[in-house]
Length: 522
Image (cartoon, rainbow, N blue to C red; front, side):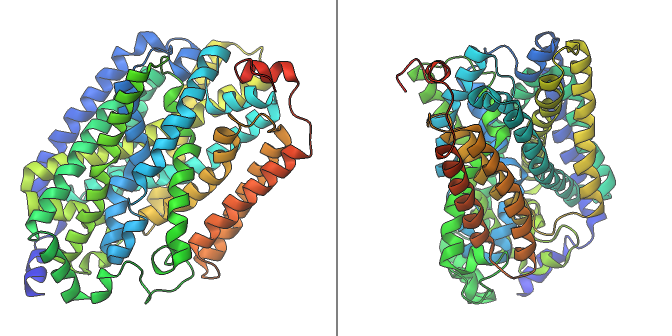
């Protein structure tokens, strides 16, 4: 442990870290953000109308769409939070930190992407809630789904702000307020300038950067500790339980259930499967996509795999390597704690070049998901709540209001993160994932294929999903039930009410269903 203490002492004085790495990180992030802003201005002409600002012109190809989907899927959770999970819990954290990631995102690509593109091109859907309003022929479903999305995505956005602030703080030592402000201001600029198209292109750039950064960091960190065998020997020397795939020493209730119980471990598979397909900011990546050929689908699949496949598995390895190097010391640094695992191992293992690349990658991940969610939330208010009930309102006014709400939905999670940042990033965001995934796996993905689905079933599903996630999260945090148990309570209950409510009420008229389902007999 003496070597560990020596290494850790290099980073106990954060201002020293800032002098050594801050300038390089600032230059790297600055170049990336400058390019994002330029992409926003480049897309300005395609975002002048209210409709084009929300979803572009249905002309974006497979490479950009695939990279953008990978960027929104990974977020600060994957590029920072996953490392924190394996750093804190050891190998048992792998189940929640990336084992099912690529399995989760592929159903979104194959089962939801084509349908969402069809709703946008054939029916003029501009938001995910807009598509649901068309599918169920219901203004209530459209507006209620918008409100539900906003609620959960604000929670998720808090995690993105913390990721951006954590990585910036780790290399510069700046106070959190400045780290958070930098994140918010940059996102605001390129979003209000470029709208959906500019955001999509920025997401593609950021997706490529974060995939490369995480892949290289994982390999370098593993080499630094001496390879897989040396990694396990060092973990065992500190505490043998870090090698366990199921941590029997941890409680089987609360957040720890995800790492200590078969119920919790199995639940992580369902969390990833549902949240990728149920996340509105993921599904929205297909609204501006052109109709793709089979060759295009092969290309988009390759893009998603390159960003969300090997790099994510290596993220979890990075957290383990950090624990082998620093021991448990990072858990004592408030409020960042285990989420400092990756940036610190980057500094000792890769020096300035790798640290700069990784900082750029994390900033790219956090800002990409943040911007995609903020765009969805702003569109939810203007398109799915205001416009749907007041269609006579000028589109110019709606466009201006959308830009105002972009600022509002950046300010809310910014203030929350500044006042009360979550202790462990990935676990906090997991609650929002359970709610969003449990609700919208049925209301979007299933509804696009099940003709019998009705607005009653969708409404019951959404109401129950919000109530059960909120109530259940309180029981989890108080140690009454496990987080994995909550996943099954939300997912199972949403499914029962969705199917029961649909079976007990009349579906849409046959003529409307034929239009929605390609003219097939109902």
